[in-house]
Image (cartoon, rainbow, N blue to C red):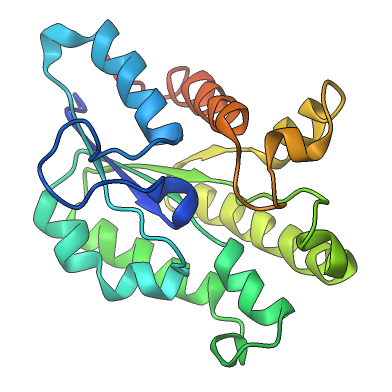
Amino acid sequence: MKFRRILFQGDSITDGARGRNDDLNHILGHGYAYIIAGKLGYELAENRLLFLNRGISGNRVSDLYARWNEDTFSLKPDLISILIGVNDAWRIVNGEPGGATDRFERAYRLLLEETREVLPAVGLVLCEPFILQVAPIATKWEAWQERMPRYQEAVRKLADEFGAVFVPLQAVFDDACKRADASYWIWDGVHPTAAGHELIARQWLAVVQESHLAIL
């Protein structure tokens, strides 16, 4: 299958302060989605690829599911890339009402099940959620360390279950910290800097373009 409509979904990391209108200068935001779109769009210009970004800051996986009709199914993508999880963990770690129960894996599976029903041929890319030990994340580091590995393993498992490509990111960020301190890559433990977004984009391309979902 040729992938021509590529949709990025997720939270603020994907959102990247994207525009909400038709201004082509801003609709992809200023994060990893923009970098990926720029590289592939240039290299494969003859194929007229269309890149879409529907990441929304603050979203949990349950929020994705709530808007999946209008922000995914209606767009009829050929490939969907999802990066989600840190806000699910945030609400639990910080004792917010939205984290009263942990619905992450259950809601994620429901979203993927419905996606396979509605768009059976769609390519799925599941990106691993990640954190680094920088304030404010560092102030509750033990709680984060308890929660995030579960989510990371859940995403890996779901990728296997639904025939998706899994993009590991935590180890890549950990390795990058050998070159520069954690805040150089992720300034607050959650949100990547420009260099951090470049790291995500490079890893995404390295994994996806060597997989059965390669965009050609």
